[in-house]
Image 1 (cartoon, rainbow, N blue to C red):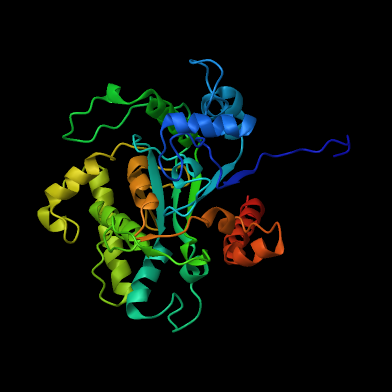
Image 2 (spheres, one colour; image 1 turned 60 degrees about the horizontal axis):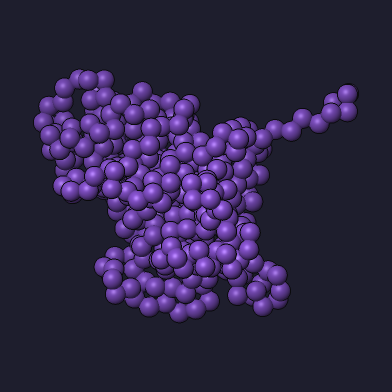
Length: 376
């Protein structure tokens, strides 16, 4: 610039294992509020902030202000993209999954899983034993990013939504029965989600240098497989494609295109015959499942006329409370060293050695940041 000024663009804001909601009610093992206050006061100013302690009873904590006040949210909203990396499956002692990704068990804020056609082809190719190029062997994208459990996005809203606590169907719980702390957490989670984020849930269980044991309180289903199954079931219930592979990629893609066309017809209000229902899904079931999300806007990056499908991409909706259940539970119990592994803590030689398996996570993060900046 001739005038000597440098233009600074707010491009990408990225956090790794950051306690966005504080650690009050988000400790690795639940502890009573009295214990939180003792620990928080013992850790001086930082501890009091993280445990949301204040001098006055009705005073708002710094963490709450940073997640809800325009003074903090407005600058954050100016970034082109916001990314949050969080450890999944109970591996992070310092910053558990819910606070790192500001999830809330009482929130129905929609998160979207972006399923590209190429990814679906890869799923089909795994069945037939070939990669996307049709040749055996080679490292696939899935293998290169094997540490990623799932990537979800929230849509940036023009105005923060009305905070409405979720009440499970059939329960006798009133919306007003939430504790003061739960209401504060719900508001923080919703306000942050409404800025629009990409949330990367990281699985570093294989990188933790300690043995694991089977979780006696969980079924035997692998945690990653549970996420995949849930998303595919949700995907199929929206009628985009039913996984009944003929082991022929072209035939399966033709089937997908046919299902997409029928879904677009349905989205325009045209009636479908029973024979037009998606494979394995009765028409009445498909309608019932689709109704809940029919009028919701798509993430801004999708141009499809239907709120869930296009010829190239499908966006699968899943609520914050559902995400919480999927990414916080594991079929095995691991020593919670995930925090230092994910960020590859290398403050000395010993740390560098035991945390070295987290290097691919940071490599991928750096590559992604550069790619996002270059492709802007």
